[in-house]
Length: 162
Image 1 (tube, rainbow, N blue to C red):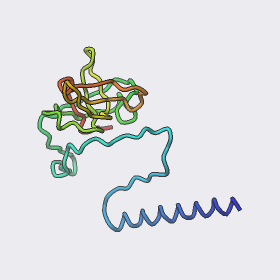
Image 2: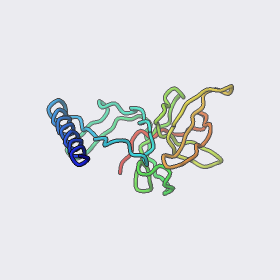
Image 3: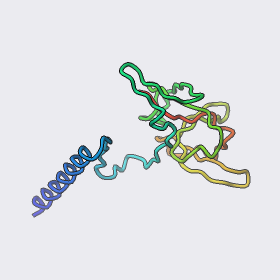
Image 4: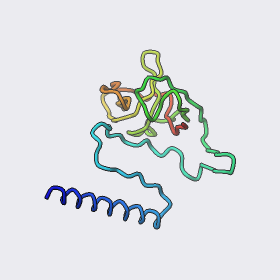
């Protein structure tokens, strides 16, 4: 009995997967990640904001050009706090944000704390008697960095190359 139930569930999953895949191929050219249940070891993360609109990305036969004013490149220390998104083998594209309104939950920011530059994801935004603050945390860290103020944020990562 359990064997038939498992086989039926597997058949339903495969039918759903195939139909979703076929629908996606017919209806658009979007790539579709497949989510096979919630993986308990993966943290729930918000995606970064859409900092580079598609019209600002130009793809040529031998080059990719991204129109971003004030962009610079970043290299990362092998701390492991932001793996697999960022590590010592990746190169980041970053900009200096102009206002705190630009910073969204999910963005990866570089901020200064105790004289060091730290790169972590914004997981919350709030306001207290001193104004707006951001709570950041490395994707692989168990604890947050505490309240980070806009004046401490030096960069926002807007792209990563591996």
